Amino acid sequence: MLTEADVQRLMASPSSDVRAETAQKLAAAFDVNKLSAKERELAEAIFRVMMKDVEVMVREALARNLKENPDLPKDVALSLAKDVESVALPMLQFSTVLSDADLIEIVRVSGADKQVAIAKRVQVSTAVAEALVDHGRTPQVVAALVSNPGAKLNESIINKAIEKHGTDVTVRNTLAHRPDLPVTIAERLVAAVSESLRDYLLTKRELSPDQAADLVLQARERATVALLPPGSKGADVIDLVKQLKDHQRLTASLILRALCMGDLGFFEASLAVLSNTTIVNARALIHDEGKLGLQSLYARTQLPTALYPAFRTALDMVRSTEYDGGEKDRERFASKVIERVLTQYEDMDAENLEYLLKKLRQLAA
Image: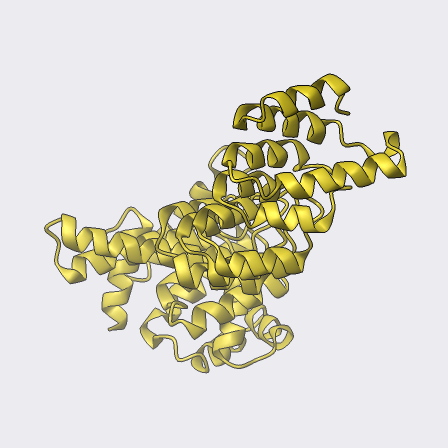
């Protein structure tokens, strides 16, 4: 704590520098486990005087040295947290004295710098995270939040972040790197990136709208197929398929692309959702030993009739072909499937999936 010499120096020369130095020394030594009740009461009284000091540097010294002190009186912590940025930021990012209610109130009335500080806290509750997304002044606030592994973000909050700032590259990139990102969120990011790519192609490249749309569709579908590992099944796949359907992105070319890559789970879920059939019944019809099961299910999906032979052939190939286990085995697997599918359309000479899908879309039209 302060010595008699410190007090005498402060009384002899109460300049802002001396006051700031005194504040730093007192704040750094504030440990309730080492203070008597009277000493603690005196220290807190001094803090309350210093937190109103007209010199910012004095208040800054307090905030820097008290930011992680769990025994700081609530009124002192709040006063410093609501001060100018240079005083408030350390408190907002590190002080555990501030409650969620305190933080939410500050988020609602503060600028971006204070909001970013709150977004960077070691732990950010769901309630505070939602407030940051709702009231964030800039995309940088949301980017700081979603890049924080200690932020508790549910799917609703992430969806809201994409709706408000999905066009911001930093927000998209930080979201994409969050661990355990729901596949439905990942698909929304893919769609957002695709729209940005389309705008870029139209404004920066000499491409027609149709050419740009075709390139974007190919890129988006490639990325979407890559979201789920081969063999994925369960609620995640169903949710992804439903989201794609709701946003008119569950196209015939996407389903065929996934099937050619060996993704039976996505194919099954797609036909189930499009035909309004349970996944159990859809699987039974798809894997029926006869030929009529898949055909009857396919007819209820409103997928292009002209593409049915391609789906039938691809399914037969996928069920009779296995990955070889080597590097890029998925690509080799797809090549075998595509080659067999192409035999259903002798007027086509294609060596890659993009060309095949383009031709199949033209045929379907």
